[in-house]
Image 1 (cartoon, protein in one colour):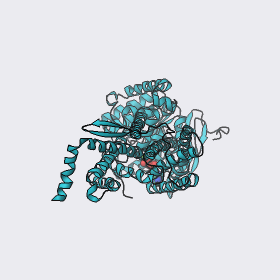
Image 2: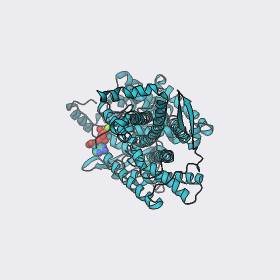
Image 3: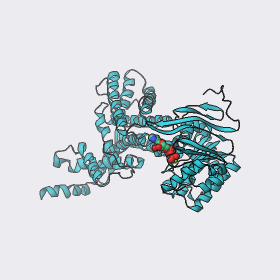
Image 4: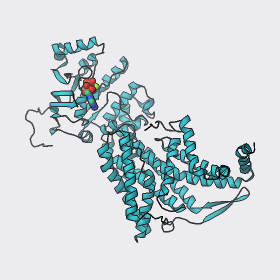
Length: 271
Length: 318
Ligand SMILES: Nc1ncnc2c1ncn2[C@@H]1O[C@H](COP(=O)(O)OP(=O)(O)O)[C@@H](O)[C@H]1O
Ligand SMILES: [Mg+2]
């Protein structure tokens, strides 16, 4: 990381700048020369047909994948390779397309793991559950209880999450990401597989997080109505390339986007 | 007819008519069972957190005991030797993480299993090189472990309790209890269960897999050391101990690879059935039941409940 040579092109308002990122798996090009930025405080949607490279993009941002080319600048620090733990420590939290929770653990414990990086008490105090460890555990429990109240999941606090319906699991996963108090929250299809009411709840939570806590959000979502309602700006990917970038209104009128989504409608996919 | 009588009737008549002998046998079975449970626990910890079937767990028991006795033979006072051995188990955990797990992460399970074969032969070779291959005496007295025995008058007969067995049962139970609290109530324990459930989710909240792996391998090393001391005190310390350590295998089949309660209950069941089998039915087949009964029980279990008593993962065929 060479923080000294800060790129001039990066807008100070940008929390994240993706520059010319390409990513391939063997012969498959998941991303080709993609550039866009995410401004502080905005909700930035990433849309596109299945296999367009949206999830791969998030994986690059939080360090799961390392771009074959290009760079990612987060908070003024430019990186080519970043480890997931460094991304988490830097304030990037995420949820997964196919919920990745700790299935054997309760809702409470799942969300508590989001506090991992903020807890520091030593091994032996923890074992004794005494002194600093107990105080620390209590303080973090309070934050977690607030998140549980915010997400209206008090009634499932003690239930192992593997037993919960899918919609609630997605909510717990959001809670775990919020517990990290992230600067940038990456949401990978948070409403996939939800019914209308659950979608409305989730939309409300996402807006609240953005407005009340000022959290910057990158949102992958297929439901165009949701995207239009929630996002400030939209990036459109197709076959690993960026084909459009702008406000929801601009993007909706873009010919290539319309074409991409018409093609998709033929395959019978939702969106 | 006579055969059926001696299988199905005589042993139970004997149990009823001499309950003191039954208690004696049960007690010995329980002590062996607790130690089996301890060894199996080492396996379960490592399997849960890193998905590695650690073939070397048995040899770690021998290696830990050998290191302890070896240090003492070099003139190191017993308690200091104990601390040094704990240090060696920590270094081993760090080395395994650096040299084996980190480079091989995301490789197929079979490759990681092979790596633990490698670790097994490394530990045997290294242990023999440094401490020699001949059997050694466990430094029981020097570690202030009790010796001798107490005879209790129970149900019309004397039942003998070896003090070292009592100590083994108490210490093993204590370790199991500490581990249970550790895993359910602390941040590191939570992180450990998280890693066991989903690597990518654990990484996304900033949990370091490397740190967790070092912790579980160290915990497994400590558990191996305790098992080695206790078993060594009952026989002696040599590579023959790994036969005992291999009993963890049937225990795991019974208990499930991923279940800590399973390891405990499985250990007790195997320990008790072995001793009962040997004492009441052993003479029918000329003795030696103890060496194979556990595997027969495990085999039967595999047929009817391949995921184990509490386990949630079916053991894959390799
Ligand atoms: N780990 C991987 N290994 C191989 N190919 C991958 C991997 N991850 C993604 N891909 C490929 O990259 C392309 C983009 O996938 P993805 O990012 O999941 O798309 P989206 O989220 O937009 O549906 C697909 O062709 C997919 O098969
Ligand atoms: Mg995707």
